[in-house]
Amino acid sequence: MNQLKDKKIDQFEVTPADFPAFQKAFMAFETRKRVVGQADKNGKLTYHYDHDAGNDGE
Image 1 (cartoon, helix red, strand yellow):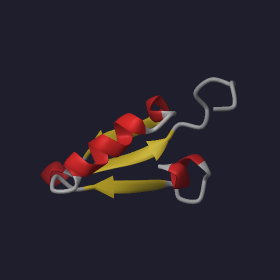
Image 2: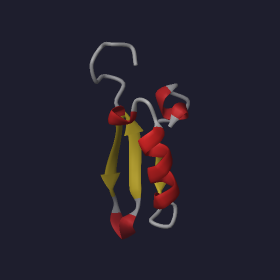
Image 3: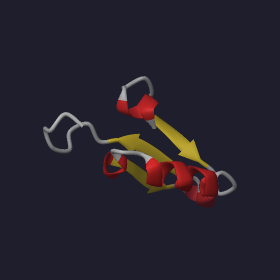
């Protein structure tokens, strides 16, 4: 998620098998409200970072 925040990657995918580990890291991520997920086929989730949400420099 830091790579999303730092604009090193545009998005990443999480599979159902990886979701429990992702959820734990997600809940601990300081700017998690800016990490936006979209459900895809077969339970995959695609996440991106909303850099335009607010202007507080988070």
